[in-house]
Amino acid sequence: MRATLLAFILCLTGTGAMAQTDEAANYQITINGKTQDIALGKEYKMKVNGKEVTVAVQQKDILTYQDDWISLQYPKGLQPAFATPDPDLEQITLVTANGNGVLVQKYKTINPTELVDLMLKEVTNEEVSFGYSITEQPFERKLRSGQRVKGKSVELTYGSDVQHYTVAALGGDNEGIIFITMLNAAYDHEDHKLIQLFLDSLAYNRN
Image 1 (cartoon, one colour):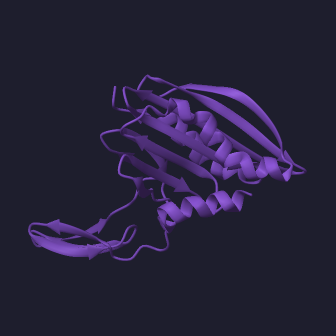
Image 2 (cartoon, rainbow, N blue to C red; image 1 turned 90 degrees about the vertical axis):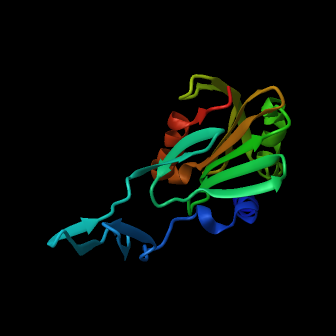
Image 3 (cartoon, one colour; image 1 turned 45 degrees about the horizontal axis):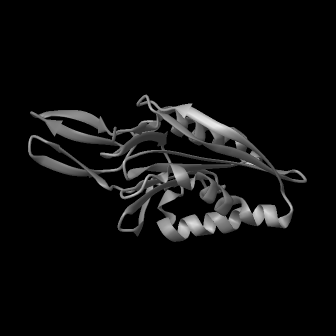
């Protein structure tokens, strides 16, 4: 069921969407031409004009991804994973260790608004075949950039297992974006924050 979808996403994106491990000294700071390797959150002593100072680089709790198509925010500890399943299709994924998260696809040659039903069927077909009951309702939301994105939300229920999916799209002449949010109710508290932050911050920059 849900594990199959997660495996599909990770197959396309790799494991970069999972939480990162402890930081190594993967960053550098340069002061007056002197460079030192540093790790996030650690303090270092450096001399500036003969005076010793303490330097530390911290990562913000909320991070931003931005390109010429979209911008969005996500919690630290996650890292966007990127894939290009097709030359005219780019994909960005943010998935937690629980398998919840968001997927955004950028279509360069078609308007994806007609793909909502097809995408929704693809991500729920196995659960429905297994016997999950499904409740569907329209979804519409104003993006941070001002446009309105439209699609559908579904709730899948089988015993105590409850899963939520939303598929929505926005497009213009032969281009656009479509996104999927995935949330298992068992992990609603923490993982819901990722999805809500995505919905609150998503901006579409093409029109």
